[in-house]
Image (cartoon, rainbow, N blue to C red):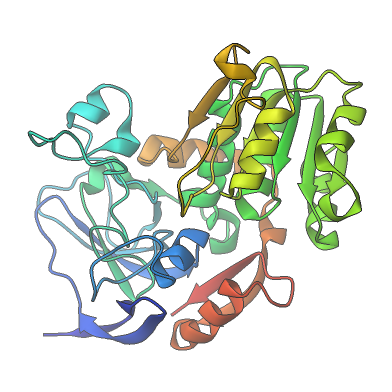
Length: 357
């Protein structure tokens, strides 16, 4: 059986490059030859054992590639075509999909639905940090990449761009809103871009890394707050003349940022949570106005499917957003263990790494 190289989860603390059989293609599947992929913060949670997956699973959920083989029932595509697939690969026919929540796709049981069921790559099935990945329900999930766009230009679409934008979308950002984004990593930076596209007129970015603050300004931040230069709450309230923000987007996943995001909301404001949390969260009485502040807390797992990917590709192709600066480092698949070491320890100003077989 033909083999391929793949980044495999062995145990907490160990993701290694090894060989696995190239997947067999079912009637509704497509086999994609990966040309570029990347490492996500969620992959680091898996590496650290903070998010459980099965041992032996291929990691990664951000594929850019070329159709190698199509299933017998897949129409509308051709072998050799450049495509992406979202991190979320909905079937299109589950109860969750038909309720308009494709990210939670998955079979129901007598105990209910499994949360995040639409996230399959690198979670419940083999993922994209490999030479090939098998895309299920290919007709619902493959989005063609225009010839004029490079792999790196669309590399953020499958997850990071979709997630960041959805923070602004779920937060219902409106024209003229004041928005704060906590943590200007790749997702936070995309949330800044999404808030600008939605019409926010004041966007405050919170971080401390100078390079990230600079990119945030280019993507739409009108103000930046360095959390090492004073109390974040006081700085944000000063920038908003004591009013607070309409929407706070939390893109880190810690108790401190979650709590501060609650505190800086105006009455009736919305906390849009994108962080992946590793421990239980507490909602402080004062920050939550004892439950009487008319505030909303919304969570989002990025939408997937080919229509979502088409829309994001169109945003890139239109020139409305340029996310190329987010790719700061490049590695071959053979060196993916070194890439994980760099990315997980956030050395050398890394934002995103491009992995090419």
